[in-house]
Length: 184
Image 1 (cartoon, rainbow, N blue to C red):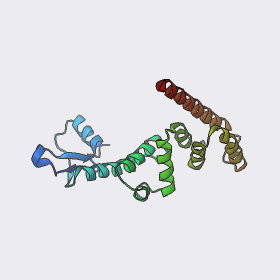
Image 2: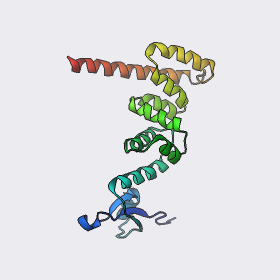
Image 3: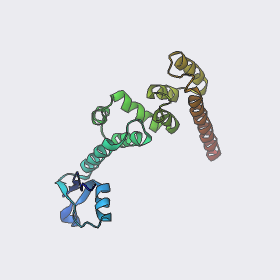
Image 4: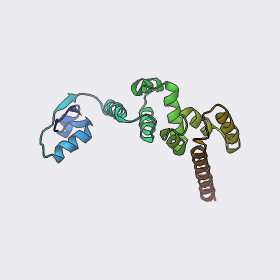
């Protein structure tokens, strides 16, 4: 069934005088789909804002499509923070607690993609991922025992948790070895 365009694209007119064109703020996928269908016109909502505001509007629209608990979500939240948004604003936009947003940004900044993958796959909650990221390798065993006692790590998920932690450790050791080679 063909429904057509359900939501107009969003364009910025601020720079039209100098460039001769509207700048697309949101709706790139909709625009591409229209072009592939051979359509020459598309419904658009026109706004007037600076490029930084346009970028923030685009980020907010993107995050609405992104499933929470994914690498895509983590990267979009990090982009929002890098664009100057405060944690509380981001938390309101994504409908999560501020601590959740801070946690995801910390995991991305630390390069903890493997731990985020564990959260994505439902192997463990973000709270455990954050605690693992803050531990050194010697402390991880104690943390896992505590998580097992608290039934966060169970006989059902213990193999997946161990696999992720071993992969993480191997990756960190490889990065450390690469740094030593570069420093020489």
